[in-house]
Length: 164
Image 1 (cartoon, helix red, strand yellow):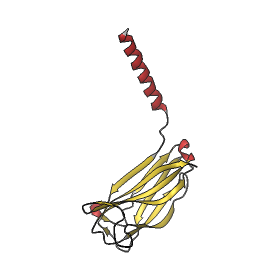
Image 2: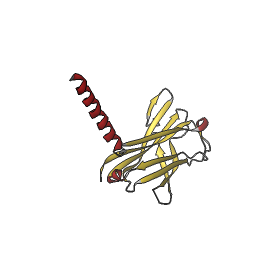
Image 3: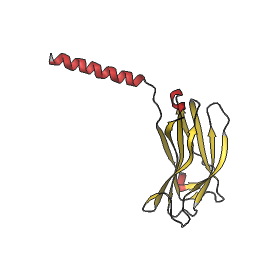
Image 4: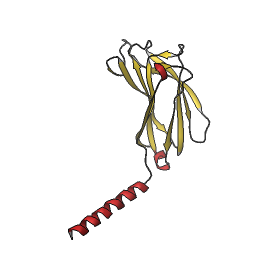
């Protein structure tokens, strides 16, 4: 009898796992960071991120962030970037955006350990991503200096912010 209960339990657990595997995966948070080659962000280096939404994900609002990791030796208080966004089935749209890294007193806004600072900078809150499919977002540094020194990583974070 004990042996039969273990078999039923195993079949039940396997059935639950199989049913869960058949459910489409919903996106709650996407985050990816890429290393900047040689810690020198050239205008030729344009990291692209691809976020795929399922139809059931399109009823939510999303917050979008740029992640920047740099050394304390970074010589500027900000970074200007060109953010290119391509919705599924649409043409890319480019926009120049300032990413502040310091406050007015010269203190880094991000969190730091030793001489490394990390920033999660909001670029859009409550974004409507109302098409299922793959969204492509790329970042190009748009400062006067090229390459831009002491930038370690650049990334994208997309998180669910609630229903529309």
